[in-house]
Length: 60
Image (cartoon, rainbow, N blue to C red):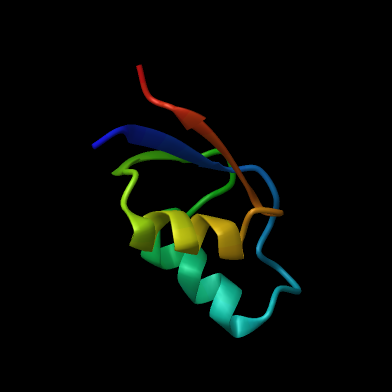
């Protein structure tokens, strides 16, 4: 499986509660934090839900 890097680029303030929980489930706690995940369908679905709050790139 490919790996992806997910970085929080916008604040979760004023977001619905389910989006806040999704950001936290991805392991993001602070602005600018980067986490690495396997590109599984579950992770990609979570990223898609909060795509306006994060940036995604392929890990090298």
